[in-house]
Length: 114
Image 1 (cartoon, one colour):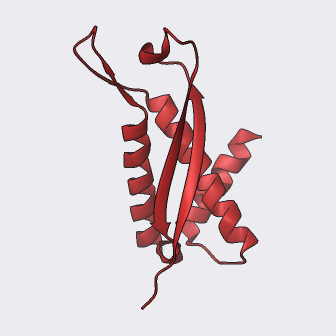
Image 2 (cartoon, rainbow, N blue to C red):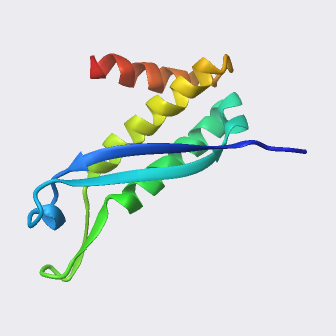
């Protein structure tokens, strides 16, 4: 059985402790996912969990001065929101139905952005 995978690329500009020296820092998230996951609520939930994990990894910086790591949650949320919008737009343009839970999240994010 052939499963198509689709890539999503989301970008965010953030200002975090790690980026204070440079000013603003742009981060991007590229994530491959199986479009078939969007057919069910369980699959959509799994995809959202994976996107959130990937976004948090992308928005985590090592800060030597503090001796630890810092995760910019606003950055991660921004990346997830951009990814959901991009996935929803691609699925809508292709005429593919998505799970109601994913549709609700995408439309809520679109409405809150306006």
